[in-house]
Image (cartoon, rainbow, N blue to C red; front, side, top):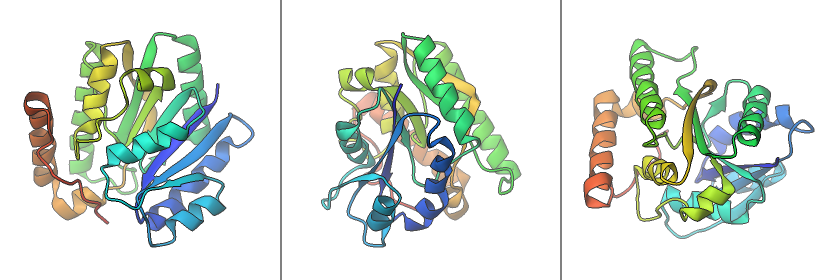
Length: 239
């Protein structure tokens, strides 16, 4: 089973220099391709990604992250699409991808899976541990009851299912991740996989603070659910 790793980027050179090397661990172990869907970077992101062997698809017009992910999926050849943000680190890449392949091979009705998303133990504060623990528990519950949920930092989706639901909603600047998981849950099984773990970049939480970020999460989720559009007009990158 081939895996397509799709990374949306715009001026992500600082993150990519840290995160692209993690995929060296699966070279020769698991068939995979690396796709960078770039939104017009001007900081060396494109050249670095190409040098690292990634297929880079560039769009210099303004776009949502949903559109960037969809562009990456359009050129993907893998049976499973792994959408992962540029700043996300994987706890154990070899085990992570071996587990994905085994999971999707053995469960034909599984259309999507999401891992635990935490902050790396070396950087985590008490607030990080509490908030991410609660969010992981909520995501676990929604998938267990068949409603679908998952943070966009990492989403693992069977390509056939992704195409069947027409991918991410490109009109959504935020909450596009849960929107997709809800639609996928209507056509098959979605699963929270506790044994898979990734570490998010904590920059947004450090700069904006958890009350602000959580408030935006809630506003965007309810806006998409009841109004069909995101509350945020743009989900800005935070360094």
